[in-house]
View 1 (cartoon, rainbow, N blue to C red):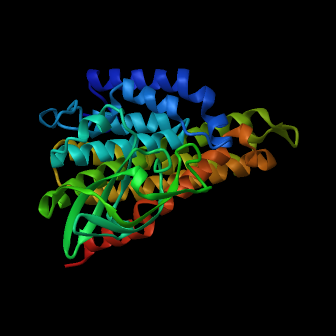
View 2 (spheres, rainbow, N blue to C red):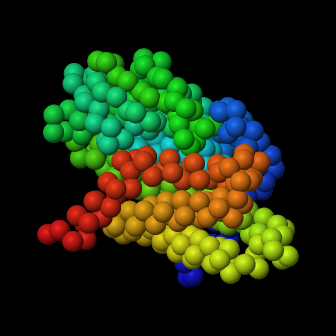
Amino acid sequence: MHNLQLTDDQTLILDTVTKYVADAVAPHAQERDEHRTFARDEFAGLAELGLFAMPIPEDRGGAGMGLLPFAASCEAIGAQSGSLARLLVAQTQCAAALAHAGSDAMEAVATGAKVAAWIGAEHGIAASGGKLTGKAELVPAAGEAELLVVVAKDGAKTVLAVVDAQAAKRTALRALGFASAAPSRVEFAATAATIVCEGSDADAAMSIAERIVMIGSAAACVGGGRASIAGAHKHASERIAFGKPLLGQEAVARKLVESRRAVDAARHLAWHAARMCDLGEDAEAACLQARIAAVDAAVLASDEAIQIHGGFGYTVEYHVERHYRDAKATEVLDGGNERCKSRLAALQFHS
């Protein structure tokens, strides 16, 4: 099967998501981002489509569709709203981890009845006696979340905990990107938590969530990169400079070529990683490669798109600045690209 080929069922899912994005997301994405308004209606739409349970196995209460249609959906959503794509990723992470743990909270998260935020191991939250201590500096969805799903350490042991978001101190952040995803700082001070699993079970749940965020983030970045290229191509075709369209300038055309080359390569890596996960293969290296490549490609494509737009590129009406901000924000989330590179080096080159 071609790397970018979908089955009939997967194509149907993508067509449904693409139509929803065009009808309900695209008309409001710019306004929500500009005014930093939480995309609650669009989040509810994703819940109605059943997207949060898409990659969760059927025997765990999910749809059992795997990560490939999830990746394709993140790409379609990311082309219009990086914030909404990130909300999809975070909610799905939480649902999948809770499903693996057999937690009663899973259904409310998988159906979207409760907004959840994921706080990963990179934040260094400590657990002791069923209470959490520590701080997570930038957590998408946390400002509007009702549940926080937290990876913490109790000594050397990993635990997965669920916290009532009202019990933690949350501070809204004016972050560079994901403006309509309610990014916030979260602080725990001996905050009561429900431990849903620990030890190897918690490690396995965390691994599932990490695969979801790496593939989902990569796909969303691909969507943003492709949208940046399309926007820059349209502007360059219409803008006249030195008696001909900007697109006729070789330097401009080359910017688009290099952007397209990087984004297309990242797309193949993201879909390949999703396929490997769905086949049950060891996909950690593939997921890391996809995330690193896609973030770099999205930053490149959106930056070049801003340059092609000139001064217009910095205005909200042209969208490319939003894709740039979301791509740059992704660079530092989930431990950041540099941590991903270190993990990849350890996997591939350390004995």
